[in-house]
Amino acid sequence: MRRGSLLHLDSMLVGYAIAAGINNSDERFDFWNDGPFSEWLWKRMDTAYPSNLGWAIEIERAAESTGTPPMEMFFSLLDEFRAERDHAQSTPEG
Image 1 (cartoon, rainbow, N blue to C red):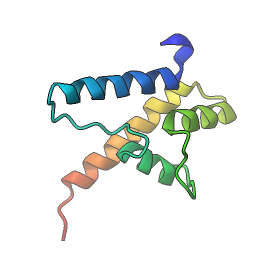
Image 2 (cartoon, helix red, strand yellow; image 1 turned 90 degrees about the vertical axis):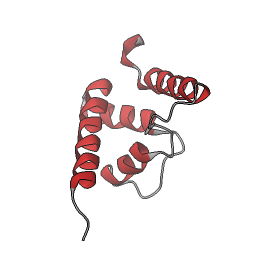
Image 3 (tube, rainbow, N blue to C red; image 1 turned 180 degrees about the horizontal axis):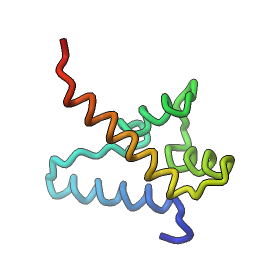
Image 4 (cartoon, one colour; image 1 turned 45 degrees about the vertical axis):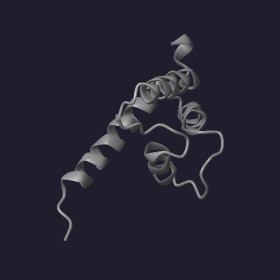
């Protein structure tokens, strides 16, 4: 991806999801701007309101403010999101 842009990654992921939908895939897609990853991210970043700019821009902003490469921050957050989601799904309710 050009210079590690999360906007490019976001566009590629959305394109993939649309193509999967056209082909009647039931594959889960967490990366819509109002999807599960974004909802988790807003809580994780302690954001009072969801960002209309989307997760890619907000991660790029956070990465810039900490001096972390945006792709590195994205994949770190993605690992954290998946671990929390998987833990919640494997924990019995009751």
